[in-house]
Length: 457
Image (cartoon, rainbow, N blue to C red; front, top):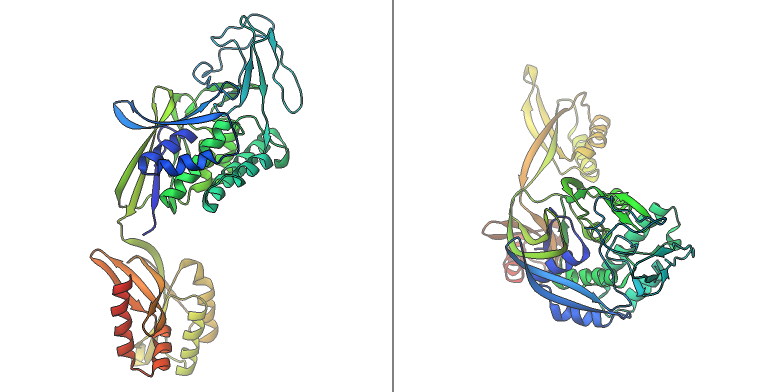
């Protein structure tokens, strides 16, 4: 049974919330700490603790940066975009410095008379402050980020998740700024804290051996925030581009604030395998991750390990035709061609048509996408002049084909799951091969395979 993770993003998602929820779900803290110690970057430490939000106990993951790499999250102060930086007069806001909105932005503080924001284009934004200080920004391109990940001592699977996440962000940023992807410099997500967040998520997912991730929808707030270049609407350009490019479903709440960070959106885009929950499932374990922002709706991410308990249902089609003037040879050849073309099942039934003429009713079970080519075969290879078509809903057991090693050799077995356990059906071709190889009767070989399958699976 594959491990299926359900992310309940009813209060958005960010990198630190995701890490915290996975740790609370059981990811090994020692494995994570060892991985982060191998990161070829400096200036950070981590803190894993328990906190209480809205009366609920949950895990908190915090990246603690030194003074050089310190970041600030000014989302609450600039939530509505209504506190402006007045470059021609005194500042009218509680923080006497401009900023990049995301907490993923890396900069240093130097207390001088003036300060400039240094970017790759070397454009300057002079600011006067009452307690004058300056910011210098440390930029990293995608190759720099990928090199950091490659030199980190983590599994190949964890590296793959981290790389995919950053590549998704790079494409979103490139689209937002009208640049080629190799020209993108990470003002926000290239910072130390975001590298730590993304690598931590990758390590925890790998440690938990997550194979499937279900994210039906991500809830986002409304309003405006101030970023480095001015006031922008929520969701921001990076989040919007990531959602658009990766088919992520968003729901806008009637709550002001940014609930989805670019890092959070990129993580979902990188790991999501489905947006549909099973019709019926059981919850095996729950992880609660705390966010740092305090909005009207508490920033909480709930992650659940779930198991599909519903019987699989799907739609199947039946093609039916009565044929009274076609040879047995032609009908046999038609059956072979129908199976080769993708028919799930083909059978003939003896029937009596009008004037008591003996005939055959051809029945073909197939998927909708195969109807046209199968009907073409029926019309070309038989004397049928009409085909009835029925759409049917069917219930089927979950099944898969597994190759098991038996005392007689390898054999393919169809494994079906029932409420009380598993049922085994050796594949006909595998049974025949072993019958010929060992010169044994079919029933004896078949039953021996079933007995040994019960002991191995």
